[in-house]
Amino acid sequence: MNRNREQVSSILVQAGLPLHGFCGFNRLRDRLLPCRAASHLPNSAATVVTALFPYRFPDDTQPRNLSRYACVPDYHRAAGSVLENAAEQLRAAFPHQEFQAFIDNSPIPEVYAAALSGLGCIGDNGLLIHPQWGSYVFIGTIVTDLELSFQEIPPRECLHCGACRAHCPGGALSEAGLERSRCLSHISQKKGDLSPEEQSLLKKNRLIWGCDACQDVCPLNQSALKQPHPCFSWYVPSITLEDLETLEDKAYGWRGKAVPLRNLRLLYSEEG
Ligand code: B12
Image 1: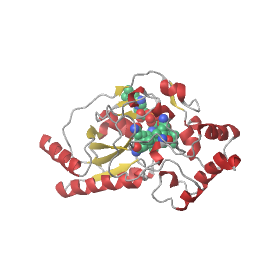
Image 2: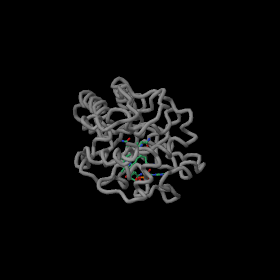
Image 3: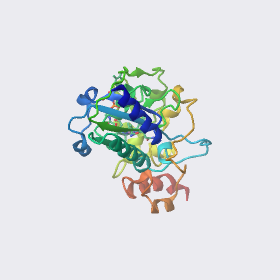
Image 4: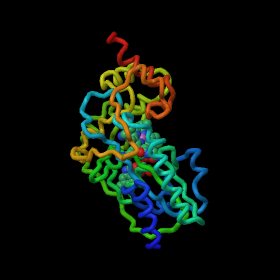
């Protein structure tokens, strides 16, 4: 089983996924997230391969109206195709086994899976923080019925310094975890009309999509590497109305045009 793990690891590295780890599917069984993609899980799922996709760009200090994750090509497509290619190569090497790739739209609680795989600690902001890349990493998984031997790693904790909770614009973070309805990232992405409080939160923070406040103040992110995965081929920190014409490779496009348009109008309507 060790030899299989080494072979899987070497295929992952060749497929562009050097930042990877493993955890037992059994450790996640009680925490699976309800979603349609759950029907794609292998029947006898045994192992979860977890892979990270760093997305922080160098020279990213210019003003932004997008959170960092939305400044790069939509990770569902960009990172998703790297993962799918890796899964394809694994299927070729182990033709009797199943390999199913997931990213974000996934029954796997990805932060917890990555922490169990030894890829970092879980921050009080709920995010995975890698020792070198910080929390500016997307997480993808490949679930397989191939049994592999690996060392279980108990999830490590962050510094609990309180910075993320203190700087969360909506006061969404507490000991109880994240209160989704107060999280600016959630507010900026939700459909429909925003309440006056939600509108002023968006305006005050000058963001039309997502939020990075809890990540940007984290001391564990201060020396995070700025070396994005090669699948993230461009970086656009700010958008205008014209940018909403082509949404297909944009992380802010998954809700369609109406939500980013609402936010853009809200931010710039009074500025003429
Ligand atoms: C729904 C969702 C959101 C929602 C709600 C988030 C939430 N935490 O509830 C909204 C839209 C608000 C959101 C925002 C963001 N998201 Co989001 N989101 C998700 C999604 C699809 C599901 C998360 C979820 O519902 N988890 C279930 C709940 C119960 O989990 P939880 O509260 O985190 O806690 C669990 C574990 O962490 C664990 N745990 C927590 N602490 C500890 C401690 C110990 C000791 C142990 C043992 C266990 C443990 O136990 C809990 C139960 O399983 C995941 C993808 C996925 N499939 O996991 C991405 C994901 C978490 N999001 C991601 C990102 C990038 C973001 C944003 C940074 C985007 C942005 N810039 O705006 C923000 C960050 C906001 C924040 N601080 O969470 C990344 C995170 C990458 C990383 N480094 O961790 C993910 C993994 C997507 C991806 N594929 O990369 N997100």
